[in-house]
Image (cartoon, rainbow, N blue to C red):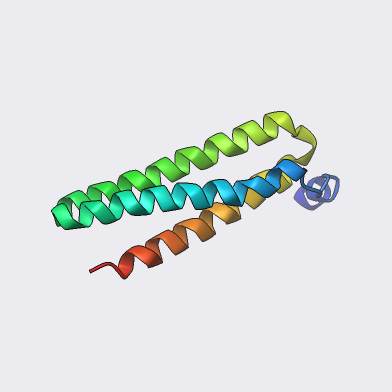
Length: 102
């Protein structure tokens, strides 16, 4: 049943979707600088800043998906899945970059 549903969806993404990785890049740079500054203060501040950064990224992702689905309802599966994979990649790179901070 789900295969029929997914095969009937429009699998092309709107041109606006090309800007989503740039938004995540900008967000990651800002959050990285903020979390990096928290490392200097204390381990507890670092953990708090890291968890807050991940939460902000998750809420940002949900907002982006909601706005894109409202604007482009015919491409909702592509937009939701694409934004999800961009979020996963950005979060993985963000976490790996923070592991190198001493």
